[in-house]
Length: 269
Image (cartoon, rainbow, N blue to C red; front, side, top):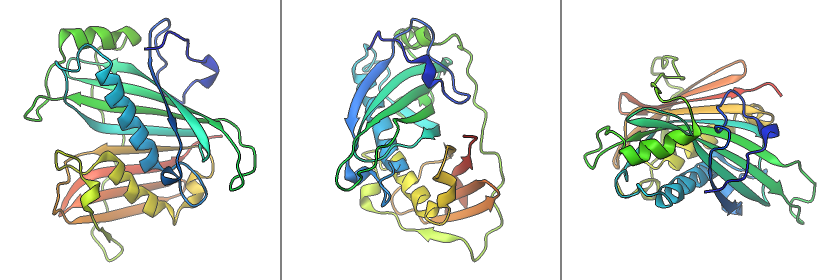
């Protein structure tokens, strides 16, 4: 844990701050070439791996990693305010932004100190990405479970919102199936030890689609992904998408069922 205050100048877009005086968990990572695209922008799948790493590190650093060891992500919100690129060091600060007895909204602020090298010689301003993930505490059968008293007490220290409820942010209905739908090939490396599609692998799908919508990520933008059902090995995945003005909407289908929804939206500068 870190007792240092979080810079108020780095206030997020519509995402809650850490409660004054509360602690946050902090970790530092190095942006590698395997995390960035051909323009050296930190890809969403690379960012998601950082978010997974700090979540695991944070859990291991608590006294309740044995009593509350199983968590699944229901949604991730990513606000890219100032993009992060290679080369850079990133600092992640993680705290609970809201909770109830079975789930939490975990905030992660990602800041970057950019460097220059022969491949990226132009100076860039410091990067800033704000994220929030809706995490559900589950038992060993994968069913929602009450937080232990110790976990609830510790997580509630950083927020006064103790009655968190789920409300979908991606509410648009998928279009009718058409010839514009495209298949997505799953690979063995996309799956975690529990035989579920890794959260970062979902964003590989998003990165493929963004090749045709690069304008959406040129300036500040928000990405929201909601996971509706697990995708397991052997699944047949189809991607549907719709572009309207400054927003791209995507639906990941497992057979005929929507497994995940994604929206990418330009934000005001």
